[in-house]
Length: 259
Image (tube, rainbow, N blue to C red; front, side):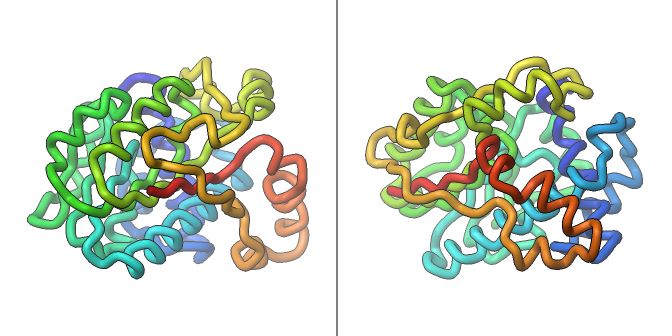
């Protein structure tokens, strides 16, 4: 795998850890895959605080997908940059679900996730938008981009968003991004550097990504208190200081877009 693909092991480890500890979400597949793969993450990437953050982030995305599917039962789901995530098992409920990632990632996924009439995997680079031809014609799409936005340039993101908006009549899209400050600070200390990633990008104003009829809708809370409160005592205080405080929100944002 290339360095960007290897970053999938960081959230995989986080979801496996929180699942074992009974926090935020239940992901038995993450536990099983991690125990088998056991990619040698280094110190920062194996931080329990980062693992908690990865677990909460995954739960927030899960909740959002469930909500959008409840509003549009005939919507398909596109999970772009899916890594080894088992959201399709945690959430379900879609008439058709596509997990999309680079060929080497999809090759590894196929050892764990069987395809079916309602679940398919597409091996491609999401930046060129060619996967949309394989998706085919559908009116409504729920699009998930978790842990992907920071690896694409602003121009690449605009092109991808415009292609998605042109392909569907209705779109709900949720994606997380570094801010410009967050991308700058990541050069000093960032767990993804431990798997070889040397450059990430940040987005200042989410409106710069609007394309076609896809428009910025709102900013979501990355660390809702009902999840943070599952931690106790010193762990809760330290986590809030590291990932749920005012400064953390200046570095990392969660944006929803709609058509």
